[in-house]
Image (cartoon, rainbow, N blue to C red):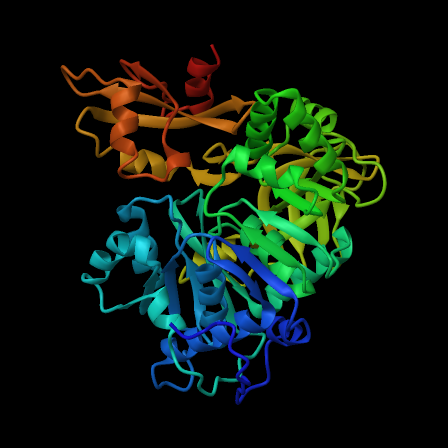
Length: 510
């Protein structure tokens, strides 16, 4: 492997993307602290340049070739992502927690021509490429590449494809451009007061915009330091919070619930150290799911911080945020971010004027995604007169938005992830003991929403939640696996034979 600390001058034939230009200005500052070591911005620039050269393999420009990559959070992940961008490709992050069938779906749906894996994950994805024409490479091979001239990458190009579930079943690729990413990041830099002196701990997955944009890209855009851990561990996170070296932390409600539990199990001396470390930080953020007020209050008692709640989604980045300075009202997600327009509309799509009237949130502005990959009809249906239809209901109270829930019962927000009940149902129907099923959710203090399934069994079957979970874990991402099971003789249906999901949900609420 080439020495990433090399002082060799990096020359490109192109005008750099803003993210790269800003990294040059922060050359000697620490960019990444990861299991592999500590790396300056100049090292990230060189490593990503070598990755880009390896991906190009003699081509002048990847020209929006999709590059899917399965790499844990760390140095190789960032160098790989930046290398894809600098070569002119579209980065398609794969989830390290997903089983092979879900990885294969994303690779094939994206039409990935190149698949990259960390050496520890090679066996998970290399066999999948044998069923396609995709080229396979490992991250050490890419980082060991040569420094070559790189293409001019226009900021209007497609840059990132993150897969998210919708009401139509299987996950869709949400495509954002370099301009979209820049708009999302700069809005957050202004709203949350990012500075080069900031140091943030990344404990979120990197196949989700929360980790990709809100943490990693914001930190690197401003010249700050991002610490990365390969996976969330409550005690490891608490140790870093206690260090007094961090200035920011971002998580989902589930993360804060687990941190609270780990703090409460700690001895008094450690509890005091954690509280003191948190007190020295300037900002802690919660998002990706509704934050229970009880969690906010308990974390305030422990950390002295009132968590800043915000609202966003894969298609729009962040749209609403409580203030950095000023009152943060529990249960609300604040006001529109810079450059973002937000409105509420009624069932007919007409804007709602007076406060305290519920409506669907629509968003417009430079942060909004370009398209659902190869789904023009779904893309068109997602917009209304140029406004993106979020499917979320809200009300405005004293100028602040309060989220009421999903407009569709088939979208479940669990542990910070948005999943499709229809997609889960399609997988569960392949179980030999299941004749028919309906997936719903019930409120959960830790996960936001808990996935439940009601099942009509085949004759003589004896299905249990334990056996179902064991079977499902081999076919579904961990957060999509049902946590409750009800076996029924017949599912409740209307006169047209459609399952009535509100009635199904009552089975679990009881």
